[in-house]
Length: 141
Ligand SMILES: [Zn+2]
Image 1: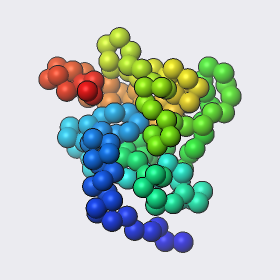
Image 2 (image 1 turned 180 degrees about the vertical axis):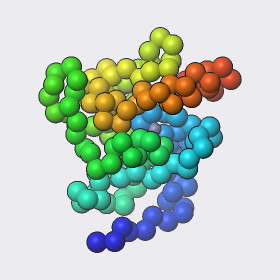
Image 3 (image 1 turned 90 degrees about the horizontal axis):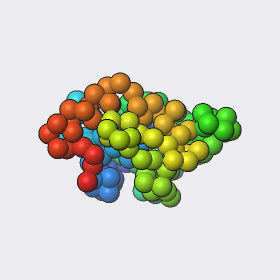
């Protein structure tokens, strides 16, 4: 089945709802070289729709790592956990910044599993966060 169309007005609304930040790693679209994607929280391959409530703004890296995953192993409990859903959960409920604001720390199984699945502390992201701190653009307000 062909992927269905997401209108430019819907894309703009998704970008505005996310305030221009990746809804997973919180990197700002204004400071990345790759265009951000509209990500299906429930993947299209698992019958996820193009409904506004199933879509999230994601940087290219997070979108690629998430792929069609909806669950992943929590590295603490070693149990399978759901991934973070930016439509039904709040980021602060599942994640916190470390003391230097360069790494995301999982507060819950969902947070930890999402950090692992999406590589939310990948080296380029940590470098970007360091650079953004220097110009007072990180952490997000
Ligand atoms: Zn991201």
